[in-house]
Length: 252
Image: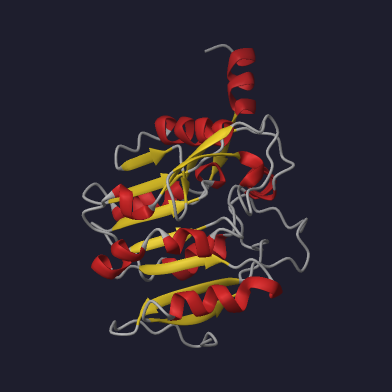
């Protein structure tokens, strides 16, 4: 490969902490973080690393270009599975590209919105769906978590603010059967109370988690903070009958 081709190849791929990622427009915070820091919301991974083991099955809703999918695939190993649902066409294609270039046969991608019903809706009708460059108001396929009929499930990771209540409405049988950990980005003051209560109503304990978007020890060694003071308002939840404790985090 000559130098010109090699340079063009490197411009199209970002070297991140957990693998190669295709370069994308950086209006999206996840994409900008991947470009500048070689990682995204690393404190979420720090929290989950103590709970995910080899052989586990994980369901992730909202791909963030596969930023955490790459780590999850490594964490669960060859005998585990990572299922990722991403409803938007262009982000879904980028997710699939990143899975392919990293050679991850234990990742299963689903071009679907995970909610409380089946059918189709325009993108604009989906609560919490961020807008990406190249998106149109195309029809998006809806399905439920229960319809995936997963044989095992140890964690549901929900990355789409505003969609948690809808997802839970379509996951009651799966949650009853498998009792996975739940990790979700909350919507905001207006809906956070209802979202946490919906999780508790399923027989779960909930703890607050507020990860900073900037990690000083980031993969790229970049000390410039383009997300000053920015945090996610997340919740980590475990079945009441489980052994999990997330001290010293505040229980909700």
